[in-house]
Image (cartoon, rainbow, N blue to C red):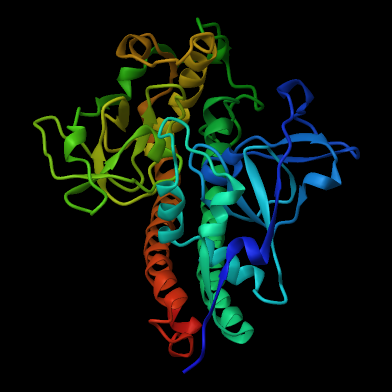
Length: 408
């Protein structure tokens, strides 16, 4: 039986905190003197965040395989995958690679038990934070370097497959968005001769929203979309033991992994399935396709569906996005901005013929079905990874008994 040794994290690792950089010194465009500025949101959000760039500083530089731990807010969560300069609410963990493989260290620190242990040290629940002294209490069980690398390879293989699926899904959504823009923003939908409408001389007429194709209208978004609001579930019934249904809250829209479950069902309970369009109603109103497992919609979230079967969820999402962004823009002056029914009631959009929407939706739904299939595969792979992780790290499961070919 292989011997596993134990080390205090502080005895085999060094820590270097990120850098605080004022917003006025963060740039949206890159040049030779700038480097990517890595923020917590770049790790924690499934939405593509517009990158920011800052002046290079080698002291705070990280590589894509470096281990980064969040220090404030959700302290103890570890990430990797970006190269650049990290913000001061994170820090890099550099392990002694003579003792421990960097990949193995990353996965060990990803254990839920490590996160819970770090959270148990918190003196404040309002703004939890990690001090480097707390990390001395993290004891790592370490097998031979050969076993460490085998364990890391199995988990990396699953994670790589998840990342490939995510990138394909991003591409599928970009294709659908490009088609929507071509047809319903640039008005280059195919005319009766199969040519792009506007550039081939299609007649444009004035409207309250600018020039639109002849025969089109402008009006309420409710011509195409129905809005369903989340229900107020009792927080006393929230649980992390998977009792009941996953509860989809605003914060879950960025990760697609609900933290809480609820056994409660209300008269106005609304289920959200993979591929449904949802948005938060506090702070950030970004519509997205839900890519997690089926759950129930919490209050201050809403779901948007086409009011005809021939209207794709992609059409619904791209139609809503600029309207919600506009509401976001005029509410940014408040401490916490809120979206209300009155705001949605005022949405005025361009109204193309339903037949054209149906043609678009036929194409878009093919892309959407592929996206949903890959999203469900991600859920299965994530569950497999999370099941294997503690078993491999404790030695309960012999690494030689796990075949990567069977895993992926």
